[in-house]
Length: 404
Length: 98
Image (cartoon, rainbow over all chains, first blue to last red; front, side, top):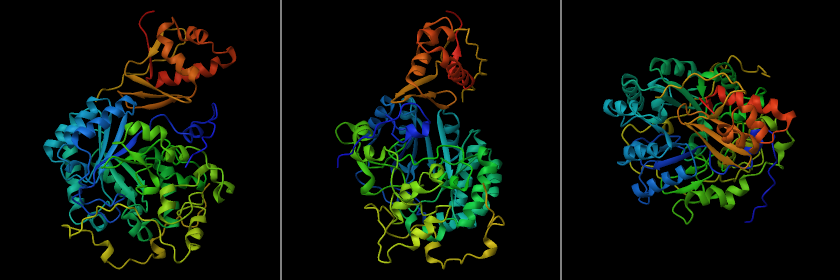
């Protein structure tokens, strides 16, 4: 496919410039391994088993060299569970030594007191511990028995080692959205910072999205909470679809896929974003000729993504400038058209679009699944349990309140 | 962690330079600015502003840099505001001498 490269405007807002892409990503996500000790029900990369084609240590160092040359100043490292790679600590030092800062996400399994002290003594590294419930009960239902204890032990080790600015990273779900203040209290207790992000129907997340994504009433509650607390919480700008309620949330209100962000997966495949592990969003591989730089700068897919959306139902909506049509991956994996509304569109267009889907529609599935094939210790039970019906009393007292 | 020095008050009559711990990455619309110390990220929204920041160190003052870079009189207040913002976030720093 040949993309007609649209003309970039001169001057104007940064967000408009970003739509046309950058010469290198602002930051990128790099998943070092599909191996994971856990089996979270909503894993966006369907992780579990290591892929035998995983990049070797030397290949990973080559990617870091390239990121340094391209002046990508930091990467978000994840997985799978990145710390189960035996060369993880070496690659961390290698990246930092090459002016590529690292922020890594972990479930805490390897963060004992010695590692916590090592991290506290290292400049230019950020750690985020994943926790999807402010209590073991809520967390372990989706992340597995014992995972709350592992994560909070890691938090305690980091705090005790004097680590500064570490994060607690929460995927907001129907079951934990009412715990936001509790999450804040928990992070404050460890001197950490709270980071909350949006649940996407990606990977195994597609299997539980209907059950776990926040209700419309909860979204409004979340929006109000973000307006009141937004300056003290990180969001990775992932809730920009909520901006269509009225007041724009702080950060970049734009889908950055292939424009300012991307994903390098454990085997070196480059996807438009971490939530889009599907052949349709695969731009190339870092092992190919020209490496990552060529994929980023020249792949047909990324060229296509670098233009403003001009057609589709959303462009006619009064709120289009606020939400820009929402999340590409969320639409794709729920079987909605990419130029139509986000499935969680706060104006309600997503719900009607979901309801109008063809009954025979088979939603797209990733070609990759590294999920454990056998039972995993502490495996979450969510899927095996009857779903809890949503009750009116579970909804926000703000339900029905129009903001903005 | 390196603690960031207090930001200097921006005086355009004094000599300035791009901060030593700051890197500029060229972009089609200008540049991405990154501070290795405080890890702040910023953007320069025009190529002329990029030239101004890169050549601050060659001129006796910020004012003189704007003249040398051919910034039209009418646009100078906007450029000075941009430089003041960059000084506030430690992206540019005062220079001791000429």
